[in-house]
Image (cartoon, rainbow, N blue to C red; front, side):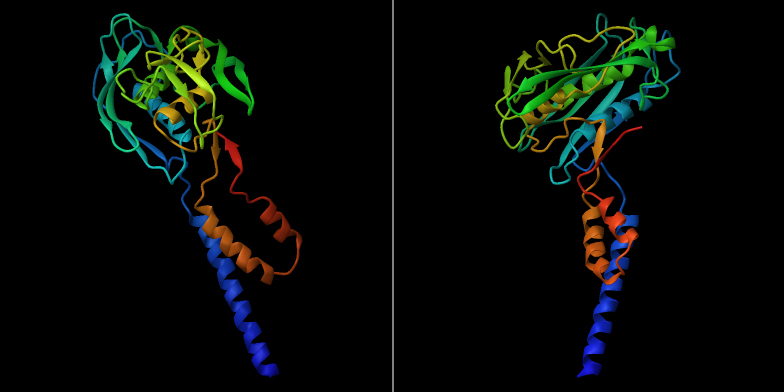
Length: 304
């Protein structure tokens, strides 16, 4: 009887050791993807950049950064959302940029493809060589609505530009704005209403967001999808209300209202299960407690 008990204990110990090792390997080897929900496939059509552009950056890098920020706003891997976008330079008198809707449909109804153009005839753009950070600006300002569910961010902006950022219109801001049209807020999108009525399971249900012709957010100039964008020396980021409006129009259930803070990916859950199964076999010690405390599926980290 003692021999059978000893054998059973050894088997359980081996199993737990294996589970712990499998969990650890899974945690270390699982690729991190914060963009599993929305995927923006982008294609640059070769075209001539404006001769008066300053900053030293380029449109493909800036468009990639703008797309990534929007993808961060819709990260849920259980909700598939693919948008195909072409983009290019073109002469657009009196405009910074424009969006042309090519295809819409599906269930839920969404914009499926389109083309974005940026003016190369008159506007002087600031092309940020490091579009993932805001180091060229010295002042940051945020705006909020008071709602029954707490404050809703309605604006994230940077002012106090230095160097070339003070001279040109921020190309990154314009790229985020035009991509925002492709995500639902477009007059040509049959699902874009004059008044957006936010419904559950999205956050802040019951909030009403006015639009101008289903194309821009009204009275929200601090939002990147507002009616007016500031000129040279200002950078406008994607706000919570921008994300919420797009989520309601395109029926994305679980948006991330701050795309500059990225949730940790869910695939780590498999590794954590292995760790939790194997962990009881290990001796009680400081590493065991600290390791579990520092691992959280719901944690978030700011972008660089």
